[in-house]
Length: 285
Image 1 (cartoon, rainbow, N blue to C red):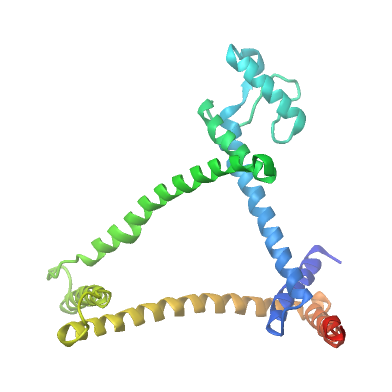
Image 2: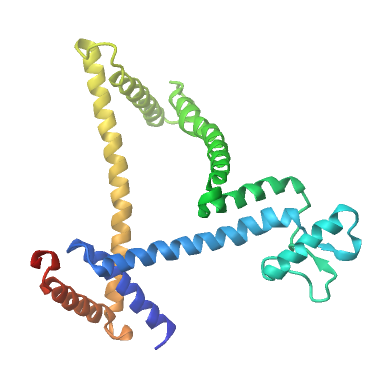
């Protein structure tokens, strides 16, 4: 059996296992769920370690250098690297002749990265109850730093950019045709009316009656159209994924894959039937 056929069987099994939840919660679904979470965590963890931590942290603490050219503090500093090399030669390599020591790359040494290294070690102390409180320092630093950086990004993209997008001039451009200008003006008016009426709807200091109530009701219509478009777009994306999985199941049902879809589906149906006929231990008690 080739690797492609084996991969098709595994893909068909996992897809059918996830779909089996439509029947009820069962061992097939739980196994597929655990495999998905475990493989995803391992994959992204490995990717982050080798693409981020090794070059950006270890590579700045111990960049590749000629061992004979080290002076002063770096002599003792790279002695520590020798100890780490003894623990893991793949993460902390040394050339075969021993002349080049350090993480390969074009990074320059920056010993201030020792502080994030220490904070990262503190996170591992979460596994030791007696000193687990040290991990709170690392978490507080990460949460505070992320909140500050995210706030700046969100203010630019979700607040200021949206405000700039609603401040549009109503002007007649000579380089556009008559209908082109009408279309631009219409779009601008729709944006202005939609923004203002939507804001009126969330203004609760006045009772929504009369003209104020009419404007807020128009805002409801704009909000519903926006929510409907967002929901429809999300559903369309999920349906496209579902169609892709069905296409794969149809492909794996061919003789090229030894009718994997039909065989696995039959085995799962029989197994679920047997499990459903098994007497409930709780009811017997």
